[in-house]
Structure formats: C-alpha cells, structure tokens
Image (cartoon, rainbow, N blue to C red; front, side, top):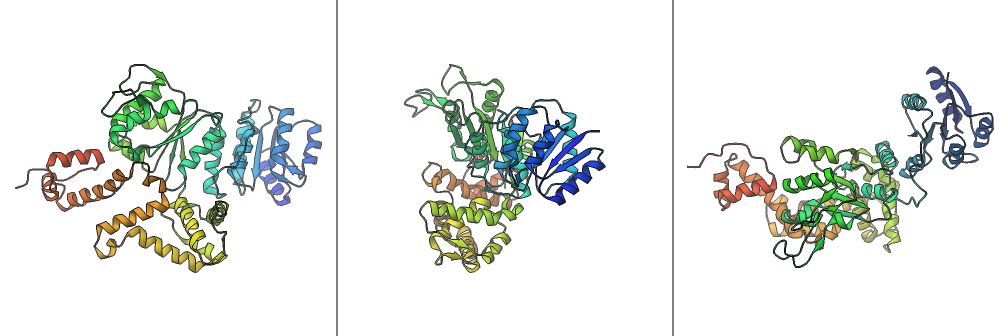
Length: 480
C-alpha cells in the first residue's frame, strides 16, 4: 500500500481528498502546515506528496524546492487556488509531477497520484531557471488552466507549437510567453504575419535574398530565419501561407537548413518555430489548401486558445487590468462599477480580448466620470457596432464611407497596420473576396458569366480564385 502525504490548511479539502485516496487503496496522512510537513519528513519520505501553495506558515512551492533537493525521486502534486500562469510555471520549475488548479476533480487527482506512483523513482529536473515572471497573460478561468499547464510543460523544450484560436484571443502573447520563459529568452523573438506580406515576397522575407535576386534587390538582406538565430520565430496566420512557401518551409523544418533567394550557400538554422492560425488547418488540409505533412510538422504541441465568451469569469479581471495599464501609460485613471462589469460579462466579444482591451482604452479617454457605469459601457458598445458595420450596411450606400470607417477602426484596433506596408493588400482583400464570392453565387458558379459581369477576363478571374483560395462549384460551361 502506497503512502500519500497531503498538505492543505482547509480541513474540508483534507477530509475529501483523504477519503478519495483511501478509497483508491492508498494510506493517507494529512497535515495543515509546512512545519507539520517537515516533522513528517523527518521520519522519512512518503511515496507521494500532495501540497497546497498558500499555507499559514509559508509558500508551498518555495518550500517544495528544498524538499525536492532532499528527496529528488519523490513525486509531488501541487494544488492551488491561485490559478495563474505564474503558478503553473512555478510548479513546473520545482519539478512537480502535476499541477491541479482548484477546484479540481477528485478523479483527476486520483489518476495523477496513480500516474506519479507508476513513474516513481524517475528524477525530474527543474524545467526553468529563476526569472521575472511578469507575463501578459491574464485569467484564472478553467478554460485558461489547460493553456497554462501546456505552456509550463513546453517552455523548456524546442518542440514546435501550433497555437489556434479566433482573432484577438492572444496568440502572440502565448508565443511570447513560451519564448520569454524558455532557454532562448536572451535571443530574439521575431513575429511575421503571413497575411500581411505579398505572396511573391514571403520567401524572401523568411529566408532572405541576395543582391540582384529579383528586381529591386539592390543588396543582400537577411531573412527572419537568420535574424532570429538562437531565438524564436513566430509565424502568425500560417494558414495564409502560399503553397509554394509551405513547401520550402517544410524542407527547412525537415533539414534544418535553407538557402537565401538567389543564393547557393546553405545556412544552418537555429530557431524555435511557434505558429498560429485562426483558421481550421485540418479542414484546409482536406480541401488541399494546406500541406498535410507541414501541418503535422507544425502541430507537434497544439494549444487551443478559448474565445473570451468561453472564459467570461476572466472578463472583470481583464477589464480592470486594461484600465490599470491605460493609467500607467498616462491615460486618465478609471474604475468600473459592478453593473458595468455585468454588461461586459454578458457581451459575446466577437473581437475577443483585443476588442475588450480597445474598449477599455477608449473608455479611459472618453468616459466623463472616474467610475465607468453600465450606461457608458452600453453607449460605447453601440458606437462600436455602428463603426464596425459602417453606414452603408443598413442603407446600402457609400462604399467610400465604409472604407473610411474601416480605416478608423484599424487606427484604434490595429494601428500598426496603417504603417506596416500591408494596408493596400488588406483593403483590397476585404473588398475583393466578398465581391467575387457574391458574383459567383449570382451566376451559379459559372466563371465566364461572373468574369463578364465583373468586366474582367476568365483567366484573370481564375488566377484570383486560386490566389484567394476561393472554392468553386457549379456550372463552368461557356455562357451563351
């Protein structure tokens, strides 16, 4: 019979956990303080240790460091009501076998104890050295706990990570956390947005080019793989990568080597790849828009970020965090009352955390009172809906006004996109895709009729369909 030592200052938790583990066939001893823990350990180590973090006489994780040094093969499971990324990472640092955020499922704890006992005797090394853990990931919801736990386990490795989630869920923040907590944190972290780069320049952007490699290449330029040497390369919106660039990226991931555009010298790469997408890459593989082999190369460690509507309990914490950040940046200091918080929690947040952050920043500037009430929130939400739809949505009118409205929204939500060279392609892309899709639907998928109606030839239309990856079904016979 295995001996499990449980440390928790909550008598109810000690009772419930003790009963569950005894039913599973273990001998259980429960104590409520670190001092009692040390007294028990003086007589020898148990088979497994289960401990809380916040205890009356100290921090459980800090104390576990010395326990792990004394008993390096002792499996440790950490329980905590401090459901933050920092806690998960600290648990990984001290070599904990498992970290379970409270409230936890008793079956999950029982299974963790069984798994730890099965692996007893294996030395678990510290995952990370000490460092500043001030991270930009906020939230204690259950939906975020699995994200934190995966990050904590993957940071010390060089495994490729694929982050999926809707726009605005914080994919780049997760990528930065993985970099900043890992052994490559002293080297560069470079992000590249596949959707913001013209298709014909993606390979040169990634791998660099030699002088004279193409028109306008007046000098040699190092690509992102060279610039990020020793660090992390974040490939955002990977689902928008052209097929030919996918092929070259796959070769680099397989061989660890690349050549610049127009070059012959082989360069050895030393970067960690973290990719992100708001698309369903599995579906894109099925439809032939994304290479299956590249998908599996990227999807070594998948992290699925929940939408904000799936973690509503984090909204009050996030809102107050963003207001505090705004004040630290010199904007007026604001507070938010409970009724306003209720309005925020009830909203579905199609723009996710980014939308919430932008709204809090606007309220910091525009709210008339120091305390933001529910009426101010509702008014701001009404203005945002009108801005996002544009005046032509309801009145069928002015396309130019819609473009101006879209630019105004970008200036608030993604100000960098107004100056990063992606604006023209972004605006054209916003208009071209729905235009072609609508005209194809109008003409039953017939490309010739669609091209004539749009005033372009069928070859041009076919090229745009391929470039935009618009699936086509229907009759494509010549029109009368």
